[in-house]
Image (cartoon, rainbow, N blue to C red; front, top):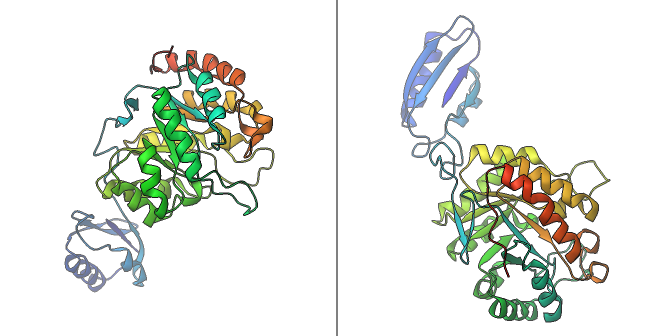
Length: 343
């Protein structure tokens, strides 16, 4: 860490700071400049006490960490992007995956129609919510256990790996029996107890960015998971809350580029939740490919107007087919490959 001192420190001030640094387990190296004096505290920040408390001293102007706070996922320690196996399908490592399915599981017939739309389009991972956290307690909350039963039957019949959201710790075991990947939604992105319990299952986790999270906070949420020994994490940018009202959320593509630069985890984009409207999903998906995303997660419903949750942002099968055909050239230009077309 670097301790920046205010102008005009005395020798006694510098000795005092150096003693604080040594007591914390670091070796101080003082650099006297023409304008400022700084003390470099050399040592592993992961093993020693933080020196941020030195800001309370009158002579200290600032304390600057050198190492990333998300040490276990940082790109500087893991140069290559991780590959995450989801039921035999790889996310990351040059593969561009499109996860698709309805916002909420509503019936077996619905899921069969959705899988028919996915087959042949290059989407090899199915999404579907059995438990739905909703802003209003009066909105559809999902079919819960019945939804999981339908997901299980769909998975058994068609062999597609499944991604489904877990809302509370008490649901982890039953969701984990069906889902090949656990989704942590935006509302739970800073629910650290749930993050730790999800990590302990050993299953891959799709971690969405909280609607008001900074990139640093998002990556630290991922660090909670990896710190528990689970490195099978995929980050998902789904838009953040801003003053803009024309779209449901503001898709922060700079966060995708920054997360790819800062950490070794795959990063995908959810244009459905970002836009909240079907007509923007394809252009946002193209932009996500261009900025370096490793995949997409989009909502597809056989009859969007009849959907019990978020009908305005769910693609019809025909619209989904168009999306897949339109992003394919962009994916190829990016140097990534989409899974083989399914029959």
